Amino acid sequence: MSLITNLQDLATRIASECKSIRTLTNGNAADLAALNTVAKSNLVAAINEVLAELNNVEGETNLALGTNDQTSLVITSSNGTDVTISAATIALAGLMAATDKSKLDGIAAQATKNQTDAHLLDRANHTGTQTTGTISDFTSAVNTLIDNVIGAAPEALDTLQELAAALGDDPNFAATVNTALSNRLRFDAAQTLSGIQQTQAQDNLQVYSRTQIGDPTTNFVTSFEAGLV
Image 1 (cartoon, rainbow, N blue to C red):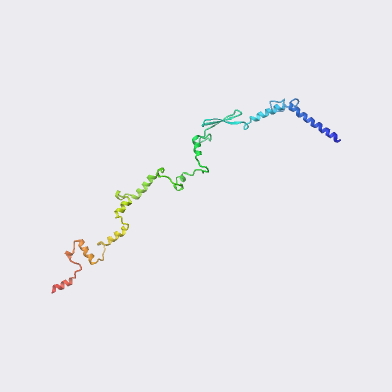
Image 2: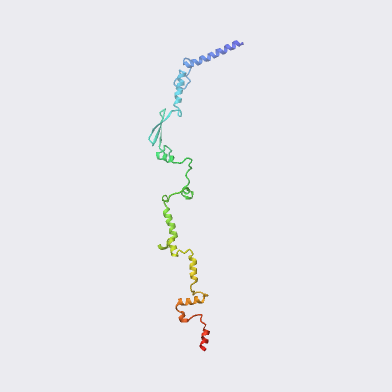
């Protein structure tokens, strides 16, 4: 078979295929009975029908925001299948109320989730300062501490100033008291007293004063010998 013959056969085949395509496009001679479309006599009409169906397929429709009354929101669909989203509830994450949005707007960027109540109530975890008026139990707690310190002390001695005044404002009160006690005549133990101390003690006792028992330092031997003269 020659090259010319092969080229002629190829040209004839290509022309035949082109004729078939043109016939299908015009819808004049092709058999479209096997198509699952309503339009079975014209290929272009059948393709347009398929395109229309594709436009109505779920997920391919045009959506838009409809009525929003803050309790529900309507999502409109180009195929007529609208959806209504309700407001958010505990069980349903629907629309957010204006107050809830305001709360979220007030949360700082990069804020972490809440800690446990015990962690939040522990003042050791707080930073900055807090006025006493914003602490509900501050006054009662302070009063309890004061009562624990005062105890059953009388009103005239329930402050440090009153106690200091009662001690004579003497920072060395204990030493002062010890010194004063060391100058007292004891009756529970023996004491070593000078003659002056003994004389003063007798005068202070007034029971056996010098006028009654005389001077305890008197030399009675000298008095006895004087009586012999």
